[in-house]
Length: 385
Picture 1 (tube, one colour):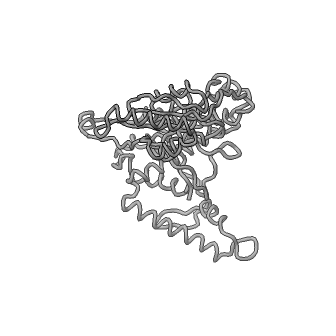
Picture 2 (cartoon, helix red, strand yellow; picture 1 turned 90 degrees about the vertical axis):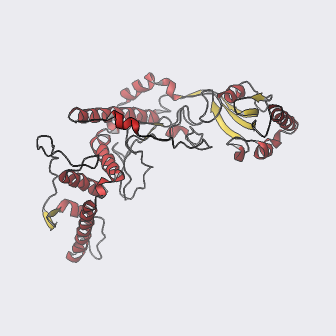
Picture 3 (cartoon, helix red, strand yellow; picture 1 turned 120 degrees about the vertical axis):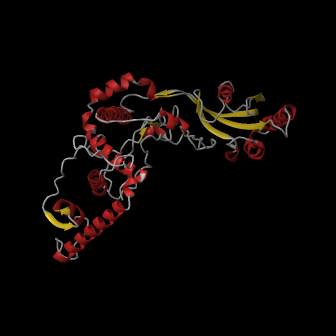
């Protein structure tokens, strides 16, 4: 994948294709040529495109000799033939304009940023003193806040149900729950009209900061209810509510030694974010960008946001300490702190430039203090193949 993306960068540059799919400036003074890569000895050419010994050796290393410790000449030719075919297919893809596809351009961008920015920052750059200082300056981020487990039944009001009818139904349900607390799950599955009805009304553990898609009034009410008790019927914008507080977790503060791994990830992510911003700002200084505000404003864009449902956009309990505070889009670290090898790795779901990740919006699960937060405009390393 690295060789493919690297070649794409070179070919796109040679063809004069910009990020907008248009031609590059004809003025040579405006064009910046990338330094020629060291390809080693030229072992073959395909329509003038050179295949170097370094690329060949990289591909050949993945092939196991049929006999002995070394590849035979015939086996080497098989490897080379595969590279030749890839070059031909690649040239055909460029001829057909595949490089103008925004998805392909994002692959190139992600590879560039990983190589020029993320991989330049190693775990070894962070001494214990640096990490301790980061921990001391961000102690609030390493505190697991107090949380309560909320179970909710919501009865909505609307054209087919008056306020009095909704309140009366909620009161009846509350009475049944108070008599038989174990019936809450069945009653929620049958009567509740919120997104958690299919989970028996179980909203999960929630801190005082709240949870996306959950009315803050429900959260505030929950923190006034004793564990194992059912609330009075109360009204929110959605309708009438009955909640049960199933459990409670006290606030927990972790020491530096307990959170050292998370501190390293957070400190490294912060440094990568700064490096990314500096890298882009340097490119902007030499760029000529013209924006037509009138035409831009005339384009109508309708929201594609989907309604909230359990499991979407949550700083869920499943995150735990290992994921606490980690930025979405951060490259997986190898032993030397560089991005993990891409060969054979499926990798995480890419976060492309300008796209936010599944941000948690607040504290995370019981094992860790914070959910993941997206880095605006920050690409994620592209999975290998």
